[in-house]
Length: 379
Image (cartoon, rainbow, N blue to C red; front, side, top):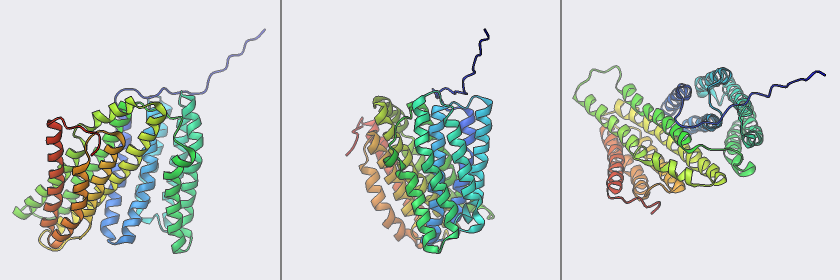
């Protein structure tokens, strides 16, 4: 009698411990996407230019964040997984290249690259050793695909329907958790928090790049040195606010939550709240670059203030969801930032100073509260 053995399908183990070098390399491509969005916003001031930058960013962030959930469930150790992640990385880079044309028929590369990322993401998730994760992605992949098809269709519609299709696509992505419910995905807290923290650090790097872009082509004199100092102060304020012990407390909050609850916490705190923070940093970066270019003259009225407010509100929401610290200073800073920076827009140096003061004040107050042991979950 002849016995036949069957090799099981490829199965990959879930993440544990620190983020891998493969993931760090993969995340680098997001720098280019954020840079493209910043350039899009700065080159097309006004509500239409802002929306044409932030709506594609919302779509890219959803899929990019989804790969963070993926590598939390699938360690990128196997050669096949690394190769597919390399293809996904290429897709994200193409999305970045095509982002300025995403609302035009010539920008077809954006939706096609998005759909390619959707397919690769689903294929890799189906290799997860956890059966519930495989069932979970089968619920969510159709929503991602529908959103990609809407983005593909949008540029070929009349103008108002183009906007409607884009809004519907973003709604399909971010509301899919309500329709399909976040379940089946097992989150390893340490890896999940570290991965999102590193992505945020990469995005903060865009504000540093904005300082260099605003300063390039000019000799370094006293006014430029002051402009660079203020720009670095803004970036430092963002970094200090985010990386002030919240990552450790976020790990503890996720670890203490039941698995079903942990999934919704992950979506709210690291999907939605981080989307707001990233959008805020993009506006800040555009504002920094413009303010340095117009250091002694009137600069863009809203970017620095609105970006600072959105970032602070996003981080307040992140803390609120996880219960990792007080949020009053962030909310006050968000309220104050918009009018203060708008009034200070009479000169680039004044707007930069206003944004830096708000961020550094929030970071300092937070640091003092932590030093006193005031770690109340909410205010």
